[in-house]
Image 1 (cartoon, one colour):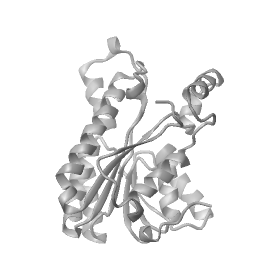
Image 2 (cartoon, one colour; image 1 turned 180 degrees about the horizontal axis):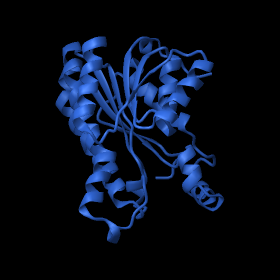
Image 3 (cartoon, helix red, strand yellow; image 1 turned 135 degrees about the horizontal axis):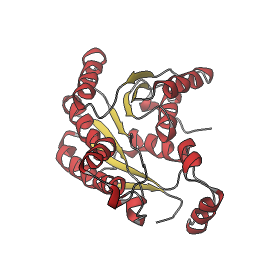
Length: 253
């Protein structure tokens, strides 16, 4: 049985990239808390499948909003629309990202800008769109999803790793700038997580064996391992936590 945080009930939560992977688990866990969940994703099929799954579990249903996060103007307008109808967002989870592999020699300017747009740019502009409401409430929480990949220097996705290292700076800067308004900002930093995407493309038996050898804990991490930490940092139980990185990596770093 998962922990229940009473203060998360009916709290307005916005999650980017909530249709699949770690994001889907985060959406599901907040719905179990009976939060008012809004999630943004470009993949309508996966998002509707998630809602169907949540409905079967009889959790509070989330609101899915279809949007390509590369379209910053549309993203901010959607967030403003939510706020105007439902009130200020109380928890923002910047989750959406894509760890597409690439070689440095193959990267051109267009690809660079696309990957930065997918993995970092929307973190800033989604936060910008919710911050005024949090200021008025004199309370709010932003949780940014990072990755241990840049700490390990894996070398097969340099733009992704660059963006994920930048998430640390973004998190710490927001925490300092907005702390006086009682707005907390932290990052959750996953290690090797067995999402459907990772299993399909990269988590081969050979690679899994290598990961488990390097981890202090000898089990494969799952999306719910990350979601549980996101919930804790979103709840009042973590009211003294800000400007920090919380690794969920089974001790691989």
